[in-house]
Length: 67
Image (cartoon, rainbow, N blue to C red; front, side, top):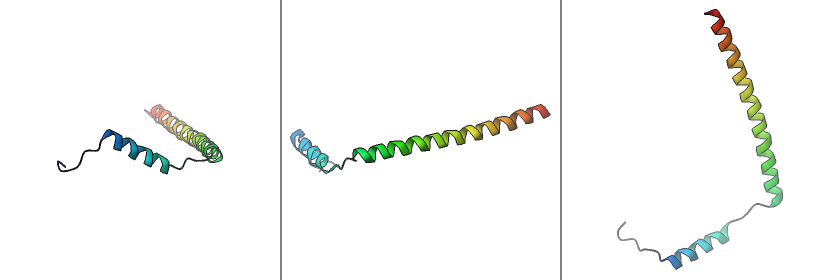
């Protein structure tokens, strides 16, 4: 690694700008669609885990009544 050439700050800035120009940003429609999808998926998963947690809680309470 000692034989690698150091990049000057000016060259680094040029490289960052060149890479920044390659970025393809999503459209507003894609962003909204993705946000809605994430919201719906979060709701579905939260309801699923609420059900699993409630089921386990009921089973544990039932098991404790046997002791």
